[in-house]
Length: 195
Image: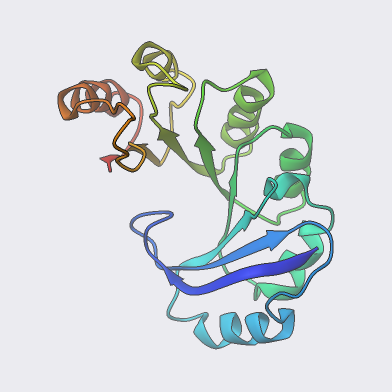
């Protein structure tokens, strides 16, 4: 495991929070120095809201040793947000239970499978703040699928509805469709944003 990318400030991944973002990759490679990242986060601890950890090339929950990295990088009493697709609810439950994180950012680009829905329950039952980002690409997730997720996303701190980047040959959902979907999510979530 190594740090493949580090951004000192990130306000996009978890809107409303000023975070340092750390991307980690499985395996070995030349990356950003763990010591430098740790020192920078320590220096910034009073000016950031927390540290976001995400996987690069694989999900953060699939990378061995993520708990060690959290322990080494993040000062005590600093919020840790894990960005995940949530396919490993048992690993997520272990990290929550051991106190490594209290905030989860789920990113779904297609309708979630059972293990991903189980991860939402793990976060909810663990009294975690969690956000759900839906990447709404018509070729991967229908609006009906997204509407079916309303109940599963209940109690989310934030829901982000994102359309993929514009490409000449790809269709995108219309803004009216996104607004209707957002109205449904507002019944169960504190904050709904459309991007």
